Image 1 (cartoon, rainbow, N blue to C red):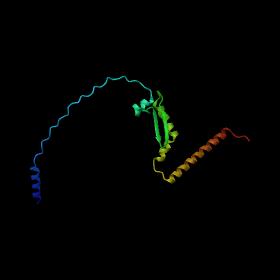
Image 2: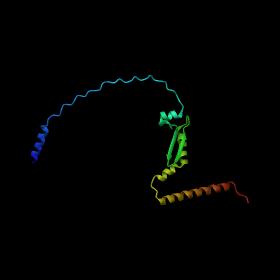
Image 3: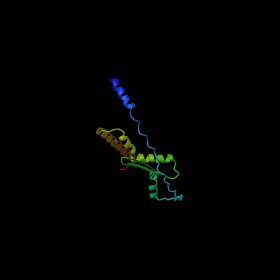
Image 4: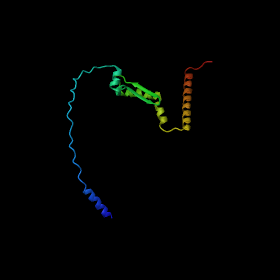
Amino acid sequence: MAAAALSKLLSSLLLQPPPPPQQEFTLPPRVPLPKPSPPSPLVASWAPSAENVAFPSLANSNVLFFSSAGFNGQVLVQDNEPEEWLLNRFRREVIRAGVFLECKKRRFFENNQDKKKRRGAISKKKKKRKARQAARRNKNNPQRW
């Protein structure tokens, strides 16, 4: 049974008529391209709108910018400023904006109990800092009765 089916399959494959010859592919006629215009001189323009339109990716190329959940840290690059100074200024600005604390907070999922603990710890730190500053002020300027 299997041999008969196999021989029938092979005979049907071998006895098929050959495929029709492929048609020859012809290329369309050549269309001449227009000649390029002579190069025009480039004019330097300091208009910020022209730069933003021509090179949108370079619109803020002189600005280091980091944004996280509404906190922004932005530093303008000054001429001939060393990279180390620039990075230090940027780091201070990001710390001042609270981005690192926000990243730490969002690093892992925080349930309500952990949020309460963190908020309590932050308020304790603030109270200690205020008490320390008040003690320092009183030490420098003792009150006279």
